[in-house]
Image (tube, rainbow, N blue to C red; front, side, top):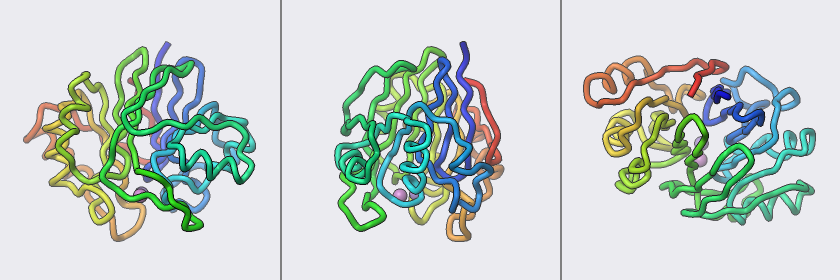
Length: 227
Ligand code: NI
Ligand code: MN
């Protein structure tokens, strides 16, 4: 058994674990940094952190084609169900649930959440995936918050943090976040999709080396790391 995590650009991931494919925040067809299209993504589960278009754009398209179970907060599950998405599993902040591939816990995030048609998207969240090979924390879209220290207390093998600035944490706050979470490895995301979130991931990785105990991993969209 192994877990392979492929960054699909921006906040989107494909996680192959335990013979299942878990997709996080599907944003492919309109994503300038995506290397894949919604019509070719494999999915048994789709996790959605919040309602913004750049995280939910292709959720229905992928769910309809694959029959994947969509895991999101209550408001987003209701919104997708109303559009005909058949299989949803509603969660909320602080709750965990055991899925066939591992345990998923929904964490808080400091961010807003409006769905593409203006509907209320509930609270923005992040996810901790407790997998046989280790714990992965996807902070998703968020500002820095001190409770990241609590999230890290279970032992995080891999943290995925936004560093793009403007809409989320920027590089400085993301360094502070690494210090609070104390993950073994850390990957920067939510950068360089558009000019307003342009960042130099390699420069940030150098700072992670110098200022924290974590090992930074810089990926290009489409690249995979093994947990
Ligand atoms: Ni957002
Ligand atoms: Mn976003």
